[in-house]
Image (cartoon, rainbow, N blue to C red):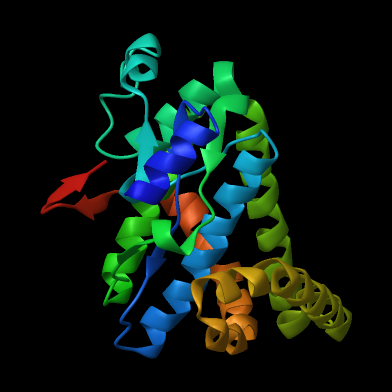
Length: 234
């Protein structure tokens, strides 16, 4: 807490996001989630650092009370069951993107648990994806669509290689290798920061599974239902 407050005050910020990391995994599935979540936290930090905030985690988020009231609080997003943290970030970013920071300190880390089952994991990710329809920043929406189309095309190449011609499969493998390399360059420093460098060996598996997972979540997250806190939400 002292680290967050100190960084908040010395940098003269209106909103501060800090790292959230999974810990104490009990299975291979949970370790994959830890690696993926580091990737998400890194993307959020990079967006904030580039003065183009896109995502944050409400489990470790701080903002000034006067800014909360100036932005009208959660007005306009209060009808949503989830996503108020990230959508409030977007509200502040519209006016004060240069007053949003990320506290890159191990002393500021908040630890939480990964989802124990595939069902609970997919439900969580569908909940996160569902708020994308409320984004006002069209650049963020366009980025999300581009990422989804990229993974959809990769999946289509793989299926084309299996069902039609091996050349599609060759294209898929080349893109996959490039994808894994780029992701390694991005995520390796994050695993070092978190003290979880042993997780990097799971990257090829995660990168491959991500293709199917992102295509699935991109569709179901915007048209399906999800379970949250004991209730089903549309």
